[in-house]
Length: 259
Image (cartoon, rainbow, N blue to C red; front, top):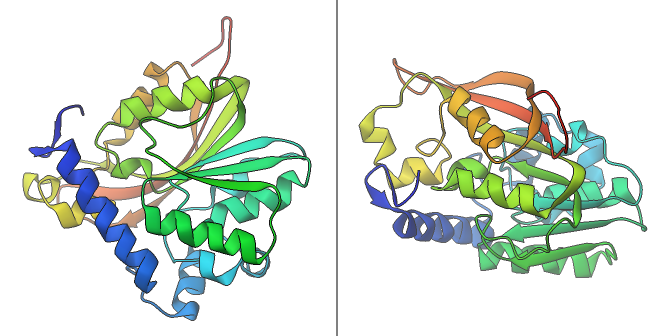
């Protein structure tokens, strides 16, 4: 998906998505509503626990996402974690607790309002092991071979160049490093009218790849042991396609390893 996506130039899609999520950061109004309870209910429906909600700044829960990648990432003390599309920092703050003071969690997001909101929460609650950087997931401001674990929650589907995202993820991971991604994919072909809709792009639908295409893109970037850890129907998009929420695990390996 290079050059254009749904007949729209990539730049136009990114700008629309950036503005939409900037507005969400300013108003706290997402698809689930704007109240704290609505955001909490949305998070619980994605697999987070009440304890998770108590362990993060309230302002970081925007009711966004389609899964709980931190729950399955098996994070360990001292690891360096990268969150692709970290938004207001919800998963970053959860991961920070799991890797402890000897670990580090870096959040990357292309929306300045989200990054500022996350930084404000980190400062207010005195997190010492988190960092938020403004940047695009297709061009990560991260050194080669420096990350132990990459997580991401319903963000890669927003990118019009997913192959570049996975190539960048592979570049910054250490050998033996892993990804645990929650994202939306399709089973069946989306109608062209949806693929062309900017609102559907920002709503995490129009950019969703067919499930096998998604897994193939990860493998083509060099990842091994690519597998879906869990899967559920997210929505019945239309008569031709279903939107699935999947959690995908993969590793950066060397040598001869099964794919």
